[in-house]
Amino acid sequence: MMPVHILEVGREESKMSKEKSLIALFPTSLRREGEQMLTLYRELEEIRLRVDKPIILKLHKGEFFFGKDGGLTKRKEDARCIGEEQLRDMLNQICKDSLYAFEDEMRQGFISVSGGHRVGICGQAVMETDGSLRTLKHPGSLNIRVSHEKKGVADPVIPYLYRQQKICNTLLISPPGCGKTTLLRDLVRQISDGNVYGGGVSVGVVDERSEIAGSYLGIPQNDVGIRTDILDACPKVHGMMMLVRSMAPSLIAIDEIGGREDVDAIRKVSACGCNILATIHGEDRLSLQEKPYMRELLQEQVFERFVVLWKQQGHPRIKAVYGKDGEICCGFSEQF
Image 1: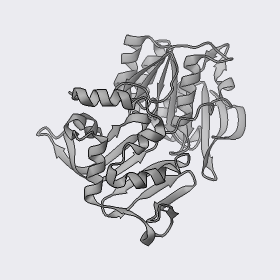
Image 2: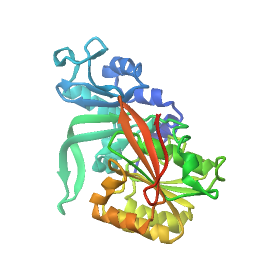
Image 3: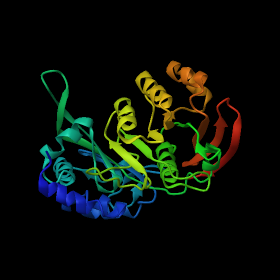
């Protein structure tokens, strides 16, 4: 159980801006570096920290080393490195000096923090006698995935996702890093709040990796709408039917369909009369045919709309919206 003082601090932090909450992750020994990185916030996607290795920043325009002068560099010898003690200080700062309180989250390999940011952790695995993972110790690297909330990115596609004022079962398709989750989040918000194409409806989100709502201590850090309920850090296969039974949503949203178990759960939810909004890795609609379990869903026409995303010149773009038979509903190249 998380100590009371951590819960109280967490509630205060949940009110912080995304920029301030990112700076708060840096201990005193790295605060100057954190403030320098903050100047890049709009472009910043990831901060990768490894013991005795250069600090690497992933931006929209590519990967750079964080320089000793506080700028960006492509030269490894000019890069700022981080020591073991500094990395440990940062993890203690993230966990409020109580690693034990975050043991459950560390078992998943990441910690969700205020502002919707997520910190991935690698280190030595500590195993239980039954072979399951207990926790991680001796951290060797951290990956801070910077949360960006982009309202309005769904505006170009949302007119094509409704039929007779009802949302269609929709699948977002793209390679990694092309904005699927960002688009999904804004669709959830607009469907939940209501828009000119349909009234607001109850939405249930199974946020297995805490990336859609970015919940921190149960409170969504991202705006996912006024009629949205979040099941955070729960496997999709269990969470979908839990939401159907407990919250009776009109639509369920999930991120990154995995294997056959996820597909079977989608079938069950659809059979209950609940609409589906989901994402999956792929190049386009045809590439899904290579996955046997997805081929079956396509043949059954469970999904009525397919939104394909891609990346051009470092920026995620919406490529096209397709109907259930593969016909193009709209083709464009909207940049996020």
